Image (cartoon, rainbow, N blue to C red; front, side, top):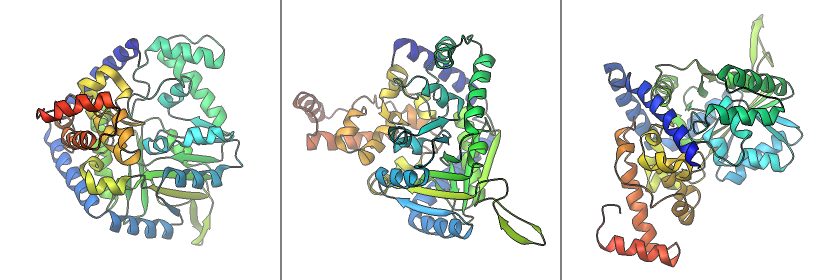
Length: 401
């Protein structure tokens, strides 16, 4: 990441951290933290049961459910649905980007329309990467964004927020009119209700989920017991991710569009999606559940990277795809393997513990990284030069290991 982009990201993070700090210490938030931590611990302890229940309930609600063990399984399922479409719409999703859906579909000749403003801006800047799970373009300043938009739309776009928003919005609304398939992630899945829960401020997920076919790609760790628990999780995520108490939208989707307004005769295909397909991803999560279960506690708020000194110094090079920072490094071990874990920044972590201190569910990322460092040294998976350095440090009993 460029130095100027690091500065822009740091500035954005300071604004976010200041906004968040104003609402963190009230009694209501503290109780919510405890509740969500208990919810996540229960979910991970009963994941197989919740997955079975969710599959059954979703199917009863009229949804199609697929369990994808690998990214290739996800891509095959998605492509079989969209292969005849010229363009598909997408909302911001770490899970979707984790398995490389956009790159894969574009390699097949399909256009993928990002509907989130930040992600749409990042489509104009393919040589860069998203820098925050909620604010993907946090590392870009106003002028950079205006320049990218000017180049994209072949017209001068002034470095003014409303002008940038208006031209990107108009383009998205024009293009989405040609879309019949929408792809989103999910913030939580309520197993007993068979419901997908998503949160957003822009309204784009509502548009994407109302297209003829709605594909939801979600990590299986997002399962919770019921809607009440799901709402608790997304409320806490919103507080830590945006510094606001509640998002503009909390969507609950439990099946394709239907109505029974004519003598209670159930009719499908009203205004919303005719088809709902839910794809649960494993992609190493089963193994992470056994060896680094705590890493799956995450609610996706990005609070850890906002205060991480290493991430604030190097940006998105510390992490794995959209799983940014130290926790992303941990997940990379199970999603990509030992070498990928090393390349994602295994030995960059300063072991300061600020990620845990600022995590709403107290994930001890430093401890998880320490275990992986030890494994890395003992297995000698990296080049000789790094191996010798790491081994010397390891033998001295460094706290960094």
